[in-house]
Image 1: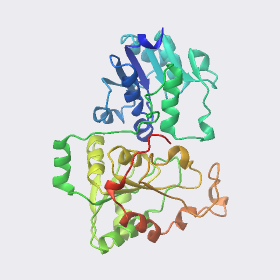
Image 2: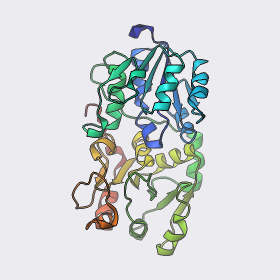
Image 3: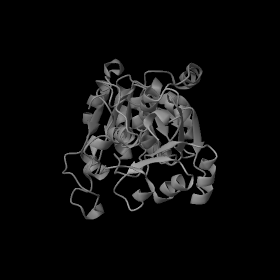
Image 4: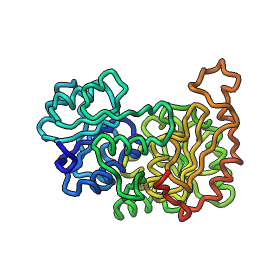
Length: 341
């Protein structure tokens, strides 16, 4: 089947929040090449509420998390004519094959890559480019088309309804510094005590701070309140759409390498990201310009060796003053999305 025949396309990205945000531009790229196509996303139940805020996606399916045959049976009913697997696993690759989807695009270097009939040569572990760019290149090559001139790499975009913004603004206001001290667990975080001292410094100069905590971080509140000397606002365990709206109201977000950082990019809020030495910033940093990345003065590590490392306290070397300087220089209107990195 040639590119002109694609009418019903499935995009699969069913892992974490940040991964899904960086996969959203795929829908726009597909709609620009196939305007009549219906684009559906298969995502996890934890991130499904994000998709209605995105562009060019007709429907969202939630991965039921069942066996491969059950998932294949569900997908078969939709009669997709093409699919792109952005989060490759054996279960997902087998389900797409069993579902009988005619065109199945995926990476070429895995044992189960034979289940794809459009195999793209990508070594993502080399971290040679941004994850967003890997996603789009897989789509372009896998489905055999070229991007619109000058728009090879599209930024992620999330649009928050005005009524949702107004609801959050009534409770939290606008133009505050949002601090999200959580971490996805994929890298070492900045210490909670440092986040607390940063909040105190911002509020000590007349700024406003809201601290957001996800479901895995609610226990942080008691520890932070024991350190804080000023009264920050608290946003605890918000529904995902509400969290996106909250981030859109902030003038700057300070966080670790975690999903909300990429949400900030998508809603045009400046992000200040704190990254440990194991994280490949070129692949996982905030996309585009106008954002800030801070790393400790330590060498790059392929993985954290734990307490036996002489620089195990590396994230403590990132000073509050260093982060504060990036926050106080925040200018939301200065952000320029880079589409040709």
